[in-house]
Length: 362
Image 1 (spheres, helix red, strand yellow):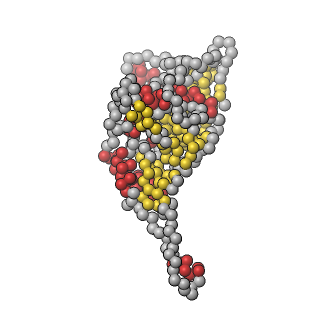
Image 2 (cartoon, helix red, strand yellow):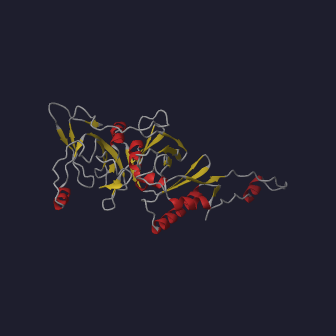
Image 3 (spheres, one colour):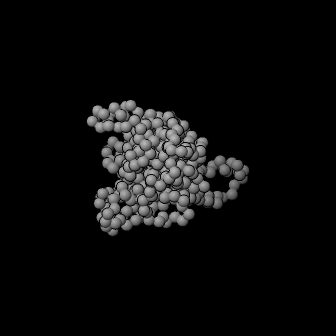
């Protein structure tokens, strides 16, 4: 699956891809991939993790757990995210009232590592644009990575695809339109950006079948977990450099947009709501409330015997911070009281038994 060119000197293999900007990565031979250095990070509390993102067990429709770290005086959310494979916006939303550029020595920072799983097939890769996350279902569990996605003017596609190829040390051939925009601003952009610190594709990439979009690394630490790209999906180099070797050719990729997720875990109902950015305008709040109402209505119609707490639902929508909240539970059906004996058949008596009505929040 992984393509790598070697031999005397440096050989290039051209692979033409679109990535919404007509990107053309070139594979360059290299005897040493050590140019990308993993940032120092605290040890993860999950044993057996083979990467910076743990492989979480699936608890029905929920995985992972919230964690907390203590900030040092030099920490920022951008650096914490880079060290621990978390997106900038998810840290901002999970820590209201904390200055993302100066949290302060001793501040307790919530790491949002608990997830209601998306409403999708639990296989391969699932990218939920609404939460800037990539889910990789593997080994009976799931890994979750932050990703940068397409900006509003160049949105990432909502589609199904497959992984077609892995790329090492990709070079970038900027299309004419990008070079023209640089020239218009008085800057010069070469026809080819070789592998290295100036390459926007980073150290590794996965080529997708969907209009040749890429999941790739980056030469910038900041921007992962935000709308920053021209349609492709950016990962930290420290993540993609491992991830690219673990994903097989043909792995399915589902790209979805689900700002509202609901699921069950151990008889409890969990709701996760995502606003798009740091701000939370009133029109977005109204839109999310409508979507939550529709999702809850459909869910309570498909799952019996639920008790939903309106206050918990209102809090989830009011915050829209991507933190899963327990909003209700599935109650056991009480045994029917013993009725006086009569001469009717069991079938006739059964016709009169009524099922309990779910207690809905609306």
